[in-house]
Length: 400
Image (cartoon, rainbow, N blue to C red; front, side, top):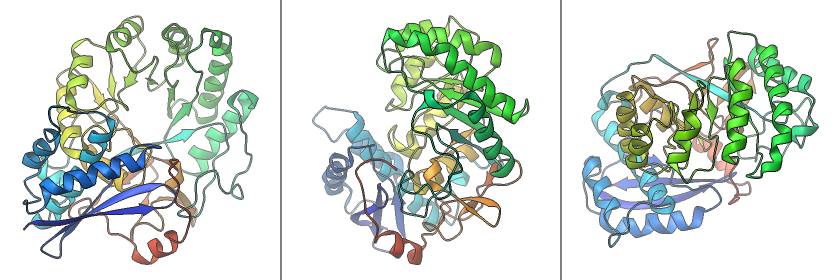
């Protein structure tokens, strides 16, 4: 089998998919994308096409190294690594289809029968949109819709959390806040904690809630961690700017809280550095930026030796999520899986994920989990009829 062509697909509302063709009927699907920077990644994919044509797509490790080193000595970076990630996912899809096996079988076999996922608890009440529409395009299914975290009373977070757990079926949530990197944010710490506590009250003690505090000034991050500690978040995500692992170590060593980071880290090396410095408890590589399935599995294995858990970052399309599920299923130190709420859909009192894009969308079960299944490759089949309708909609460079 040989690679014959790399084809880019721009899928509304904002996804970039890659279809790798071979000289057989088998093709692979991947997601080479960087939020708000799709065109540079597409250009990099096309640059790499020249060294992939004629290669055996099942030699995934060889091709990963070949792509990474094809740069006149300039390795890594978000553009290159996002391109490699999307290509890598598509190569694994081909390899699995060629072998007649799901990818997790080729990576050691299933450890987890089901994958627990969490849902974002933002500053709006949960709603859903038609496939291909951006998440904020249609508020018809929203019970209440707010525009600012601090305009929302704590009791409304309680209600939103109740809807997502009792009606939608999620058994884990994550609250999102953004403070910027200013010291003036110190006066907002108490208000943030009030909303977190209200959400916890809404779901009860058996439902986990994490919180993403989105890279504040390190001292504000410390204040938030200390204030949140008594309420036991599943994890506290990115409590400082992403640039310096050493400061992240200092933040973590000042708390007994669970610290998560890594969505903007590329490759195994920085994760090794962070783990060596005891800087994180939960690793969050993005499968579409950190190096694809190949690198995400390696990062998981490195983390296992440091007693760190894996919670793959995934704010993109159903293709990225399917790739995450394959890694999750065969990873012993898997914790929980993120997904993008724009992919959620409510039908027949069920929460389904990937409606319109794939033939058999994932269905959230009563435990708040997804069954990965045993289909070959990524385990998904594209819904050609649904995609034809989706492709008539507007595509945007802004994620989701």
